[in-house]
Length: 322
Image (cartoon, rainbow, N blue to C red; front, top):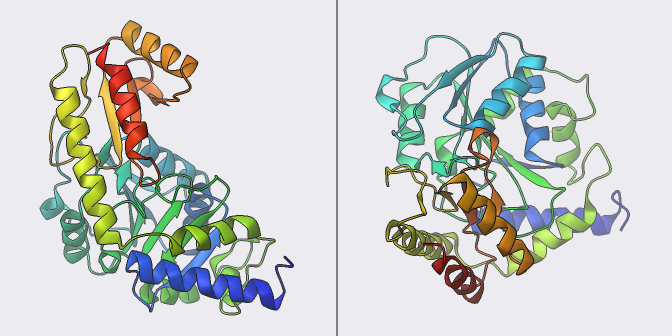
């Protein structure tokens, strides 16, 4: 399909309409197609930071977002917090910077920042833009999009699609800041992306097949509140499974901050190595531990596309190592 054709314009319109309807994204938000969440980090740093960004993180991917931004914006600031504790929203009244960046679902350690916490941070910092990386949760749990200005996610997690496409939703406040800054030096400058998406196109050649598959997946998707309920129940089943084990345990002890879409599991390095190797031979690919957690953890994906029979098969396999 020619990406400047009427057929692509129609595909783009329908996909964006489905994203808004199925995920409950406010109609006034502008949706962009990018290649990945990492590209979204770059777009935000280039086009939406006036003074400096404040990065609040509790794990490796949030830290990577900060490190990446530092290359473009040396004044970026890091505010780490304990992965076992809720983000202290009441203490976060910032008097510097103009955009707050947070990873809603930290894939590396299996934690998440709940909607109520994001809303509280926004309430305490009304003059800042608020950007949220929701790569491992968007389309898997209900997200209150009105509580932040920029949301983005790659599609290879909860959307259940091949990698190579991401979506970014921006509020009218974000679009105003984009216009004030007026950055147009890159192929993925947000102002240029906005000019093109107003015509339902992109400034670069997009992943047309990925957008088509996204449209198909969204058409078949249940209401996000129903998906959220299903994912939350599955997460509870996984937690019960590992809490009853002698050798394998949830990495995060605090139930209030555990991710519902990524279950991080802790055990001895030797046992984890054996489990991953045997699982691979049986045709089951467990998520590797990440960063300094690599040797002593694995991660179970609790994404909507995974079938009940696949979960049962994995649980039966892990039973022998409990």
